[in-house]
Image (tube, rainbow, N blue to C red; front, side, top):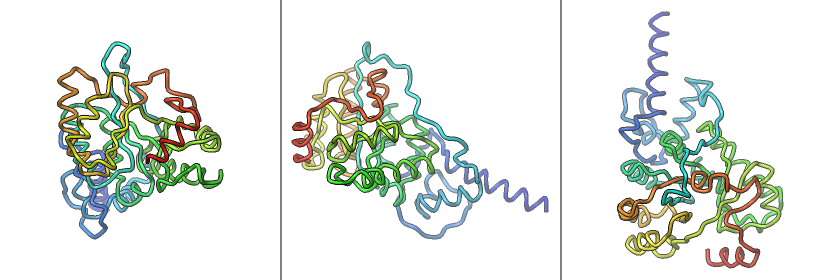
Length: 293
């Protein structure tokens, strides 16, 4: 009986080590493919590659029923962006197969970023990437369940899009998201009311790199490099060309003395209240942004 207890304890500790990982040895990106695989010794991320992030979360839950042990919210670092040259890089639509590589790049520069995640992408095997984001100090934001045009939906539909993603991210990371970005930047009174009900501030952007259309790393990097201090930059980690642009972006802005911060760190007390949005745009501007997307 004692031997059985020790084996069970060892197994739990081994899997916990995989979930937390080693900050000095970043996890590999999740492949999203299911499959078998023993619960033996693995490097961080290898088990997730074999069985998928969703299956890993299920195994963690079975071995450690209380994991995540408690709910939390993102805690910004005490950074004064009125004194520093700050820029907030934000990545939408993931996590995807390139996200792990992107996290490696950010870690090498000790750069923080904000990830507006799509619930369906998390559910498809991205949970391991999300746990790594939280562990490495990045901020998570709600980007709906399946990237729907929220302004075309009734209130019940908007609620379902945000609620499902909130619940899933809370389950796999223990984190309650406090910000959201409506897909295509499209919002209206209904979206604002629903966001307020879930305690979510709406965060848009200052600089749109249009990386979804222009799949050229040099061009994307040049557009990010033109962003001034205090700006929120829109990028997408689902495009390999965007991720390939990031080393150039980080090197250039590092050289120019920028500090890479999350949205909440950049805005500080200027983060809008639940349902509010930043930056403020009128309805016509929002419609034009949605059409461009």
